[in-house]
Image 1 (cartoon, helix red, strand yellow):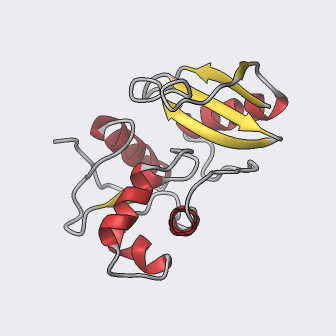
Image 2: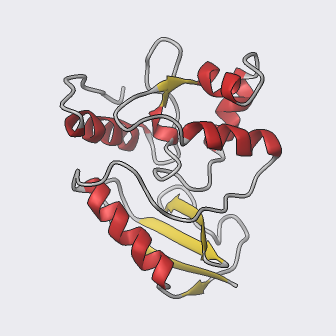
Length: 168
């Protein structure tokens, strides 16, 4: 059984979903919902979804740098490897799509790594916002470039960095 709930955040309304005690989705309602993806869920705030909300609120308040949640994203083996690579990017740092492709075992599969990033079902927690273009520019993000810039700037403040990201 899949359960879901919603939460407001500084980057917009989010939909969270879990199945069998593992987080399966964190979606930007302005871009996608479970219903849009053809997935059914019972509206219920389970203990895991409460914990997820708590950790996200701490993250947005600058008090959490890592998430401690059981995850169960669903994807191809290449996507799963890319998402695993995303979780190795430290808070406040960025990597390129080429870096993620290399982590997944195929450094030439840059576009496929971009596709995996685009299809990341657990955004923010699996930090696809930390991936930038080879020139260091902001590129696509499920919540929009303004949300991506917000998250990167939040993390820069958290590490005392001085880089400022801007959505163009």
